[in-house]
Every structure is written in C-alpha cells, then in structure tokens.
Length: 97
Image (tube, rainbow, N blue to C red; front, side, top):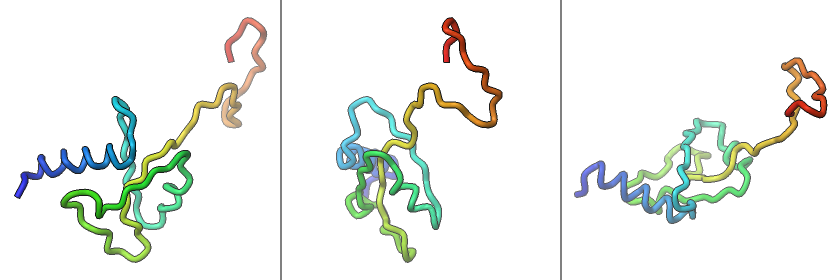
C-alpha cells in the first residue's frame, strides 16, 4: 500500500495529465459544497476528470454530486471596466485607464 504522500502525488500526476494542464501552470483548487455544481458548468474552457480515474480517490456518494475534478478559467481580464461602487472619473488623454 502506498503512503498518503505517494498516493497524493500520483493523483496529482493523473489529474494534470487527464485535465491537460499546461506544463508549468499552477491550478488553484476550489472545493464546492452541495448546490454549487453549476459553478463548474460556468467555467470557460472546462475540462473534467472523474474521481474514478484518480488512484485511491473515493467515489462521490451523495445524490447529485458528479464526482469529478473540473479545470477551467474563472475570470478573464477586463480592460476599462467601470465598477458602480467606485467613484469613476473620466480619464484624460494623459491618464491611464
């Protein structure tokens, strides 16, 4: 039986390969609770990997839980976006946005 550390590292290797994570890119994990699965559906360019593909990973047992890791983009950069809670002053030609 492998140690917990060995099992975690093997899961990480399988996840990186299965989710096609770019070399050198570090992903951030967000663990969602019940009722938040739609968040994963809202990601840009989502890629999923079933728990069953991860060595030693337990299956999801709660009804409605999909039992998968999902990788995708949460936020894109928006240049020039105006936030309503900030006091916005129209920039002049010599001011950055």
